[in-house]
Amino acid sequence: LGMLSAIPGLSGGMNPQQDKINRELFVGNTPPGTSELLLMHFLNAAMRRINLCQPHETPILNCRLNPKFAFIELVSAEMANHAMNMSGIPFLGAVLKISRPSKYSGPPLTTVRTWQQLTGAQLPVGAAVDAETEKMSRELFIGNTTPEMSEQMIREFLGNAMEQVGLNITPGNPIQACRVSGKFAFVELRSAQEATNALNLNNIPFMGAALRVGRPSKWNGPPDQHGNWEDILAKYMAGELQLGGPGAAAALNQAPAPAAPTTEPGAPTSHIVELQGMLTADDLANDDEYQEILEDTTEECGQFGTLLQVVIPKANEVGATKVFLEYSTAQDAAQAMSNLHNRTFDGRRVVGNYFDPQRFEQKDYA
Image (cartoon, rainbow, N blue to C red):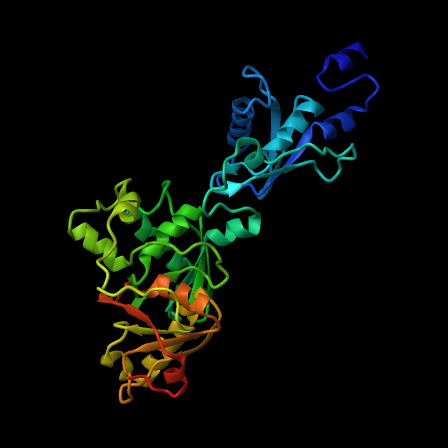
């Protein structure tokens, strides 16, 4: 009995199993790449840094890791109470949720604060606050795929391309999974940052098609600033990018954006977007190719909001080579403009403008 009393947080009158429950905490939203040792070292250091424990103490004794969460065991129930103030701490691009496990039956704490309240720090931009958001931040939409492309082929091709130009953060294929659905696919990357880097693969040629790489329609994060595959190759030819070099991704983000047209779209004035420079007359010559372009444009531009319809005048019609996107709101149209205006498409600069709704309703596409 005397030995039990000497263990921190364990009194002789307490059941050892209950004491262990009182010293345990649930850690949710652990991101891919987490290890038990890494998580323990990180949280121990965080507790020392903000004086939740003494500088010489190691409050976390053990960690059990599951695919999307973990349990940590602390030296005492009191130290577990202190550690709950770390809920909300950013870790590997995610935001950890720290709380009592469901089997805890002790008194609730009323003085627990979040990491942000304790430190005054803000959540990092783009940080995933739950497992679903974290997974969404690692997913990308791949458009314009063909029936001949298998999941393994897409995964290996795009993963190899990322490694060749240095868009991966750590060695190995950054694409963990791929699922194909008709004329498009979805890929899941190893980390949110690598997913952002992979957006630079947009328009990469593969098996006779130019793949469209973008965020899925359910993405509600901030607009991404990125280039296209043509931009990567242009930077390499200009000596701004060393293929395979560790700083390739940083160079892409730091390099100046392509020169914009003399007129920039201002505040949204319409829920309809007009795109010029995206298509040529040759693209509209074949009915099958026209239908494929229409489907791909609908799928890709649906990422930016509620897309009501896409209008692409045919080769012999007024407004040929223009693309018109009708969104449900001007805000959705603005989101599309921020992603499409001044982008490169098959080597051509795309120019976006807000289009008059009355002219659109009258089918005046001139």
